[in-house]
Image 1 (cartoon, rainbow, N blue to C red):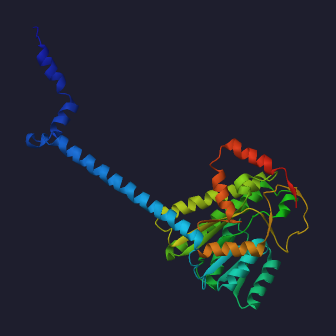
Image 2 (cartoon, helix red, strand yellow; image 1 turned 60 degrees about the vertical axis):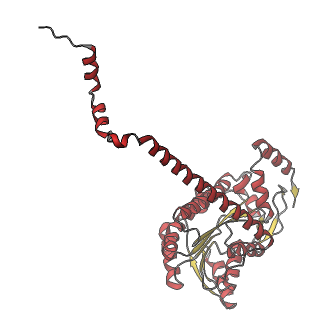
Image 3 (tube, one colour; image 1 turned 180 degrees about the horizontal axis):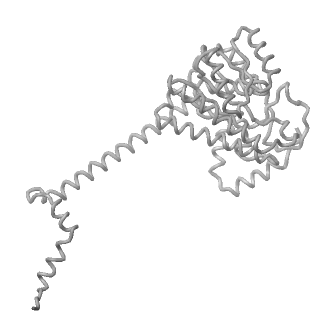
Length: 344
């Protein structure tokens, strides 16, 4: 027996697919279906208005922040008091860390002087205590996770929760130009891995009490590199990336107003009584010299004003940001000009 199916009946059968059936079930009632398009238009208009409002708020905040920054160039904000803070100065045995510990103690900070060099570190603590300050010396290898945890526990037992962390290790001095570069693993462990270990041990406790300040120190090697010192330059670049990541984490968690961060760019070499002051090298004229006590004073001044980014000298921060807008080949030509050298 032959059954003929008309085209109209065939079309209606094809239309009864599962997707068509589901669409039919989701179909609005007749009395509401006619309002579907106006409702969609209203929702889109509402979303667009919310988006425009958010953009407007961001622009207003942007210009207010810009005006505030320009005003602070003329009149710097009031410096906060550091009395009663607990600071861990990593690498306090010499260089800028030595003078940071001295000056922080003079401001009423309880200073934990952390260094692997016990001789200079003990002398520093005695000097602070003789001047009426509060300090303790802790021997620690900051590339060892267990040693870092033990160091933090010692500081908390003596002074309380660490509220200031200043990592001064691996900041190059003029001596780095005349000495043989250390092994790559040592440079990266000291300049990069130690930062992670310290943040892992200190930052969660700062978050718990909603108070703290972390200072990252990096040199000009982290901006333009350093001849024959590639691992050192890489570690300095990494410090800047670590700072940006920490700042972003605090922003997302809405903690940037309670836990402050400061990135310090040190453009010249740090010269102290502990280093060779009679170095004579034909080096780039971009590198100058600055005494460690002057550098420490400028760093603390920026920290007390909660500045996000500072440089030594100060004007080079603006110049560095401006140069980043230039084409890459233009910056290379500027480096060629700088490499004419200057005998210091």
